[in-house]
Image (cartoon, helix red, strand yellow):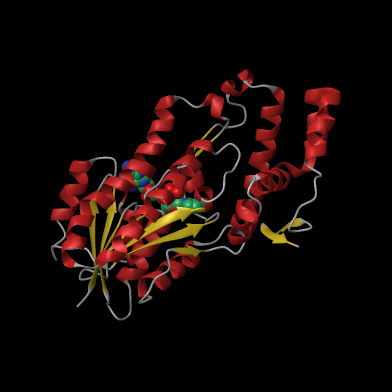
Length: 327
Ligand code: NAD
């Protein structure tokens, strides 16, 4: 009997690759419902599966921000139940917080947080009554540690971490496993689809020069990260498969080795400052001192001296090819 899998956000990226992989499974173990907000975008998925998988793939419309659309997708599942729910749909937002409108911030929360929560709400009662199921969520390193210029995105992804942890505690009583697949940078349309304050945007004229400069440095850092260390969706799909095929799936999977040390850094000392200092150095490394001097004049040295405090329990943090090494 095929496992019934429903995936959100399948018109591109991780969702599309996962849908293709599961629908093409050599053992035909899965029936995949690949859902997407806009069915006009289904061509890419269809081309990727080359139309060969009539018995293992169905494409359904589902906008995670619209409860009616989620309910409609649910009743279109022919088997009448979902064994594996993959909440993957998400949007990004990057830019100085002062420049974000409340509408844009709400939109991110609507998709990433409420969209995921109401997808859970729709499929949970049936999983509970069947006494089993899997819920997988595409998590982000941005849900585990804060990143500058990503306040709203990280807030939405941190919120999902909390919701999943709460649910996991309860759902173990129902034989329902919740797993987060925590991704670092992945080569997808994410950057294209991301709402980003672009260099040259007149809005940036309202910013103070230091924030502007740090934002430019941050964008360069992000560009370099994506160029040097971004994973392909196939790498992410392998981690999803591990989780799906494991009889006792973990709560958290990391797709990228640099994340666990950063998370460890957050909790190394109770004051939480270790991580904040180090991620600042990693992100703004190249011209921080000069920029501070320009912005604060002599006061800059006070801020700088706080960056040179000893790094217990690690003596230093080094970044190479985007991987963080605690030494
Ligand atoms: P992507 O932009 O290619 O895919 C996101 C998908 O979500 C798109 O198909 C988009 O149409 C869909 N979506 C957006 N709003 C929706 C809505 N209201 N209803 C239904 N679908 C909607 O990018 P991706 O990298 O494949 O992103 C997938 C997930 O991975 C997201 O949750 C993202 O936050 C997470 N993630 C991505 C990265 C990365 O670097 N690419 C890193 C960490 C986490």
